[in-house]
Amino acid sequence: MKRQVLHWLPPLAWMGAIFYISAQPTLPQAPEPLLDLLLKKGGHLLSFGILAWLYLRALARASTPSDRLRIISLALTVVYAASDEFHQSFVPRRRPSLADVLIDTIGAMLALLLERWTSSRAPAR
Image 1 (cartoon, rainbow, N blue to C red):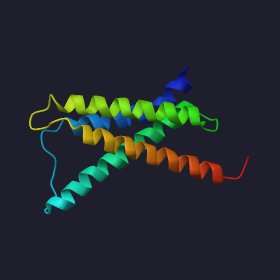
Image 2 (image 1 turned 135 degrees about the vertical axis):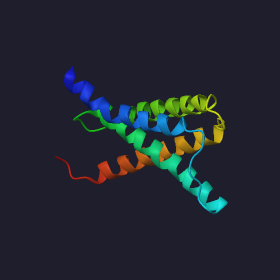
Image 3 (image 1 turned 90 degrees about the vertical axis):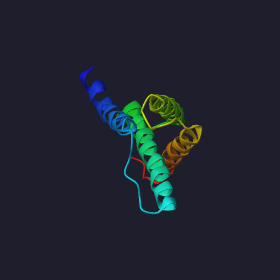
Image 4 (image 1 turned 120 degrees about the horizontal axis):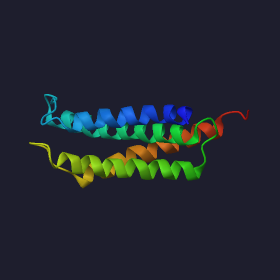
């Protein structure tokens, strides 16, 4: 039981970091609007890709991840992305965005596809 909890600490900590950043009324801005947009949307892709990978790692524990676990990981990530946007609706000067949920989903899918590709190329144990 204790070991199962330990597997979930990394995704829970990452979710906490996302929650903290989402709770900020303003975020630093890049000097150029296009660069600012690219950095923020790239941050969405990366942070939710990492979350999906952490979910998969927690779900698979020591075994090889299956496509079923990848789908569960993706679903968990999409639910958290939607809840994060809902959370932002209560933060002053922030607003929820379905586009951000879509970007988060794409980031999660890319991370899980990359994990699947790399694990399929790894030599069998």
